[in-house]
Each structure stands twice: as structure tokens, then as C-alpha cells.
Amino acid sequence: MLFLIVCLSWGTTWLGIKIAVETVPPITSAGLRFLIAFPLFLSFAWLRGDPILFPKGMSSFFIFVTLFYFCVPYWLLNYGEQYVSSGLTALLFSTMPVFILVLSAFLLEERVLVSQLIGMIVGCMGLALIINSQGQELDYTRFLGVLAILVAAGMHALAYVITKRVGGNIGVVTFNALPIAIAGVFMTAAGVVIEHPQLTAISSRSLLALIYLGLVASVGGFIVYFFLLKRMSPIILSFVFIIFPVFAVVIGAWYEGLPMASDFLLNMAVVLGGFAITKFPIEPLLRKATKGMRHDRAE
Image 1 (cartoon, helix red, strand yellow):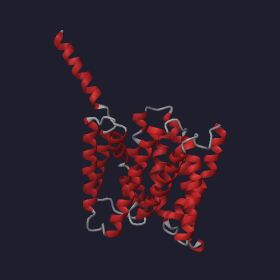
Image 2 (cartoon, one colour):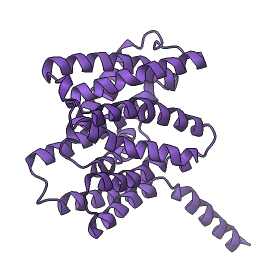
Image 3 (cartoon, one colour):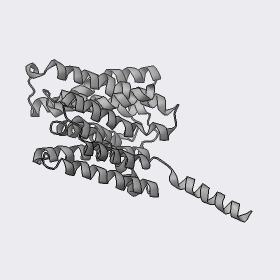
Image 4 (cartoon, helix red, strand yellow):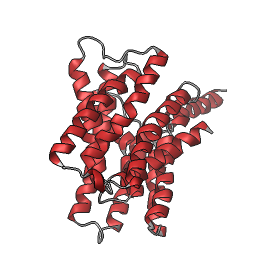
């Protein structure tokens, strides 16, 4: 049940962003979301006894997390969702594990398995088919929206890889709490100066979406996910990134009144299937099977 709650929470995040940016500009929307989320993160840190400040000597990493995990990527996501459907946004963002594999190979010198390479190729081909199938609808602004979402996914992947290399000893609550607060203040102030949001123009629907994003999607999904991380196989739990786009596509299509064409569903299955292949450790199984065959021949 908790696994499904995480999938549903993260799957509805994209529709929440879509509704929020209907009447709240993208920078302001991201800032308000963080400001709403911060008190709960602070309470969670207090209950767990986790520190708020990063360890000494990690101020540069703290700035990097604040800017390149929270500020810029969430602005790009909010910008992109002004022009791209929530379902396609979720599907585009689900490429993040692929970015992680590629960046880990270059920055951490981790070996890319054959199954991961095959999965990446299949998934990217499916994604290219989806974008190509929407070619007539994908004008310049929508193309920029797609590009913004992919860049946001790449930046999140980079943040995860850098964190693994230099910030592995930082707790998850510490990692999120203070950067969210600073990002919230900075982005809200920047939104006021740059976007000049009209408070009277904010609809109750967008306001409720911001509250949902701050309290449920940002904090609730986060708490449940890391609760499960200690109680489930990491491989099984990683399939959250494969399942939540399905929820997002179905829920987004229902809300936005968009038809789900058969070719879109087929291409989506190709994308998610390809990314799922990257989760299976095929090589160890093949080595084990080969070893067993050699043993049988020797006997």
C-alpha cells in the first residue's frame, strides 16, 4: 500500500504543477511550493534529531544543491509544463535514471552493464518516437518546454551523482531541509521582481495545487519513499520511477481531456520497458548460468 502511495503521490505531482502554473508564474510557483514544504521538513528534522546545517567545509556543495537540485530544475519543470502535458512531462522526467547511468560512467567511472546499455537505447528510441509522433503539435514553444524538462532531469541526475561522490554522509533530511528553505525564499523573491505575479489572479485551484505539492508530493512522498527504502529491495523500489509516469499519463489525460492514442501508449510501453531493463542485473545471472553449464559439462 505504501509503495502504491508513493507511485500515486509522485504520479500526481506533474498534474499539480500543471494546475499551479495556470495562474501562478513558474518561478513564483516553485518558490511558494518550497516555502509551504519547509516547515514540515523542519519538523521532521526536529523529530528525528537530524542537523539542519551541512557539515563544515561543504558550503560549495550546499550552494550547488540549492541552485542545481532545487532552484534551476524546478523552474525549468514549471516553465516546461506551461507548454507540455503533465503526462508527457512525467515521461520525459523518467529519463533521469538514464542520465544517472551515463554521468556515473563518466564522473564516478562506474561500469555500464550491457543490459543497462540496451535498456537506455530502447528507452530513448521510444522517447524519440513519442516526440516525433507529436511533431505537428510540437511548435517552437513546446519544443523549448520539452528541452527544459529534459535539462531538469539531467540536472537532478547530476546532483545525485555528485552527492554520491562528495555528500554520501549527509542525511536525507539535512540534504533537503535548509536548501528548500533558501530556494523558497530566493525563488519567491525573484518571482516577485521578475514575474510580477498578481495575487488577485491566483485561482483557488492553483492555490490548492501548491499546497498539495508542498505538503503531499514534496514531503509526504519523500517520507514514505525513504521509509520504504529501509524495508524493501532497492531494485523493486526503483520501479517507482517506471510506474509513476503511467499514473501521471492516465490522470493527466483525464484531467486535461487529452485522448490517449494507441501509438502513444505503445511508445510509452517501449520507453518504460527499456528503462525497466536497466534495473535487472542480467549479467550476474548470465555468469551464474554459464558457470552452472560448465560445471555440468565437467561432470
